[in-house]
Amino acid sequence: MAELWTPTIAEFEAGQVEKAAPMSEGTTTKRKRKPHILAVINECCTGCAGSPACVEYCPVEQCMYWMKDPDQPPFGRIVVDPLLCIGCKLCTSKGPEGAFLEGCPWDAIDLVPTAEWEAGHGAMPF
Ligand code: SF4
Ligand code: SF4
Image (cartoon, rainbow, N blue to C red; front, side, top):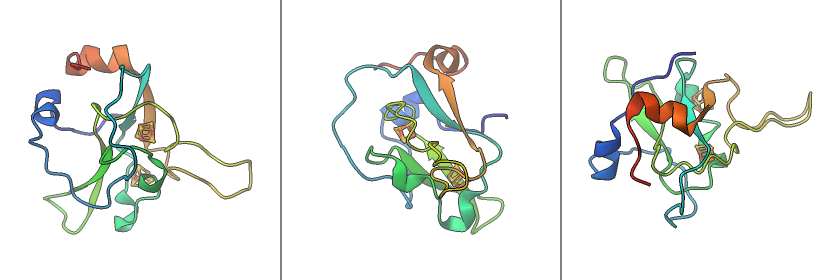
């Protein structure tokens, strides 16, 4: 699935990205090293009608956040901050078959090798 537009690394690093709620909550400790994989939102993201199922699973403060769709208010979708994602996979984990489905019900989150992602977006500073 194609990746959706996200702000640039420089914009995230400069704190120029306006993040709206719903937003993930949790640790504010900066990651110590780059993860091997990053969560990337693809074009299947529906925004879950404003109640994203994924956000509550993310353990990192402000890593997943809401971005309004300027063309279709009040719709929007979720974005992952690549500088905050720790690649923990919690946003995509699924329960046992037939059980409560955790994470994204639309397969809208891809876990992409960091090196592959950086090849297309530039290297992250940390
Ligand atoms: S992989 Fe972990 S840190 Fe990254 S967006 Fe998913 S839940 Fe958050
Ligand atoms: S759960 Fe999936 S479809 Fe819903 S907002 Fe999150 S990434 Fe998008």
